[in-house]
Length: 152
Image (cartoon, rainbow, N blue to C red):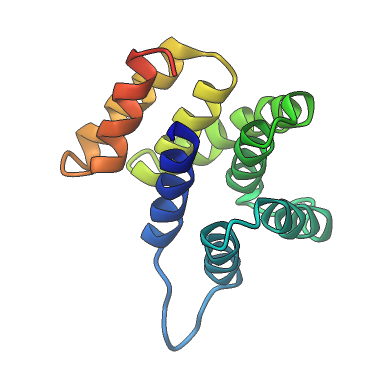
């Protein structure tokens, strides 16, 4: 049940990333593809899609975000070693992205999820709280904080 809720949360966060109708950005389209695959229950295909993006774009500025997404999906799939490696790699990249855009609640939430999956409960709770300060109406962020406080 908790895994299903987390997958839904990931999908909702992906939807929160803006898409521009006139000039859709490739990252936004990738988020939609991943969300579609997850909603169909095809987590492995979503992981493969992210893996291909990461391989094709080794220096992409949003690498940390997609590493964290893949890491979370891998951990949720039972691939703890691969997922943990992704999450460890993602956190410093997310740190830099957040330093450049400190009011980006979505990046802070993604780092919270990465920290949560890496068993950094205190860091996760701090990030969930920070994301909630920036977007207090977010149910996803409230749920994330509640689960982190419960140690889930």
